[in-house]
Every structure is written in structure tokens, then in C-alpha cells.
Amino acid sequence: MTRDCASGMLPSCGCGTHPEDTDGTFKWSGCDDNVRWGAKFARQFVKNEIPLASGEYNGDGDEDLSANANEDAVRREQRAMSIVDEHNYKIGRKVVLSSVKTHCKCHGMSGSCNVKTCWRGLPNKFIGVGIKLLKLYNKTPLKVEMVQVIRFGLPKHTDSSLVYITESSDYCNYDQRVGSYGTVGRKCNSTAIGTENCLAMCCGRGYTTQTIEQTERCQCKYHWCCYVNCQNCTSLVKRQICN
Image (cartoon, rainbow, N blue to C red; front, side, top):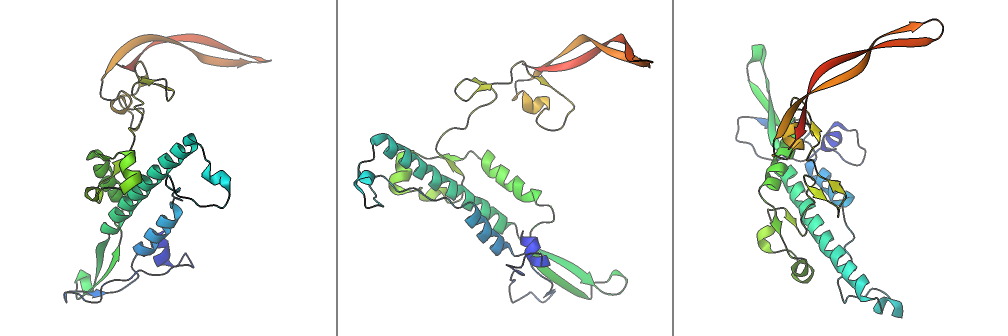
């Protein structure tokens, strides 16, 4: 989206701004990625309507004041989750803004660099931003208590960290509560790339390779009229099963 702004594809935004001064070795030129506009759009896109805290009142009727305790508890939980989500969204936007780099191009005869022009933009491969976020995630996000979030907001020391209130479900193991059957006994593929790879599917528990006899229909021929005649072919195949 920031690049679409710079390329003129979006009528609601234009080029980003760059610093006025340089170190004398280049000059600013071209159209910077409008990262700040992209961050503003992202903030509005994921903006949560944070529910009122317990005890706050936003109505004129008696029914608002007489909300039962269960509804009040749900509202408090929703408020805490909204605060946490908004914080993590903000961390993501900070990572994007910090990923802006100076890109340069040389101009001159025979590849010389008589004049160097530069512009500000995101990395050519946006995966770099994703890697930074993954490192933050793997850095052990900070757990915060719901009561604390509701009463006082998030602690100051969480300004540069992802936070969470409840533990994520572990889909590696059987969990009836969330309907997960786990991955024990699941087939995996040791040569695949992606979630079906044994390293990912088996959650680090390893896998067992089995050799099984497999029978399939083969050498099928169409006969007039009108049926197909096939042979049964047997072969030995290897398959991997998660421990």
C-alpha cells in the first residue's frame, strides 16, 4: 500500500517525505514510499472499539445500570483483550516504520557514479519485516494479568514487546476443550516444505518411518463398449508417522 501511494495508484495519498539534508554524497530524488500513510491506514483498519470498563456508564436507561455480573465480566475481558490487541498492532507498525531504508541509484557514463540519487522506502522483500516480527514472537512475549490491564493499562516495560493475556492453544497435543486431536500418529512428509513437513507437523517429537505394502489399480484399459479393466499393482512405499 505504501508503494501504491508512491506510484500514484491510490488517489487518497501521494509520495512520502524524506529529510531535507544529506551528507553531500547524494541528493534526494524520486518518490519515497509513504510509510506513515500506510501506518495510519493500518491503525484505522484494525482499530478496536474498546468496551467501557466496569462501572463506567454510557446510557440513560436503568437497564444499562442493572447489567448482571456475567455481562460485566464479559465486558471487562473484552476491554482487556482490546487493549492488548491494540498494543500488539502498534508494535507491528513500529517494526514496519523502523524497516524503512535509503535506496540509491548511480547515474553516469559507463557505470560511473557521478551523481547518486536516493529515496526512502521499505525493503524490496517485505519478508524482512515478517522475520523481525517472528523474532519478537520467539523472544517470549510478556504475559500480563487481566485485572492489571483493566485497572492500570499495560506496564511501561512492555513498550517494545508483544504481550498476551491467555496462553495460546497447543495444537500439537490432544485438547478436547478446543477440539484438537493433536499430531501424534499423523502422517507427515520428511521432504515437504511447509506445515506438512515432519519437523513442523510432529512438533519436535520426531517421527517413525514405516514401509508398507500398497495396492493400487494400474494398467487400466478402456474396452468398447463400455467398461474399464484394470490390474492390481502392489508396491512397497515408505511413509512417516509422527511420534
